[in-house]
Image (tube, rainbow, N blue to C red):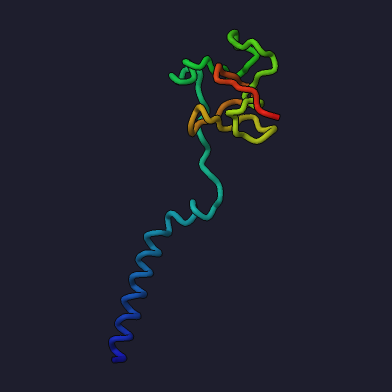
Length: 109
């Protein structure tokens, strides 16, 4: 009976050690709390080109509202004051806060 208990404890220890070693490379990424930097949207990106995206809104000839920028768009989810942030249109990519595209929609106050 005692041999069986020791044998189970040894097997459990070996299994837990194996799982721990397999998970070790991922532990840093999971525990760091920071995400990897996302890529910026390029004007040549097919979706950006179709929407007339300009990283500097003042240089866009399609923009009619002088107050329209990515940072005050309803689709922009970046923090106020940041130079760039994520946009719901360009999944997984960042846009310039002072950029603009034809999908711009005024953020509700």
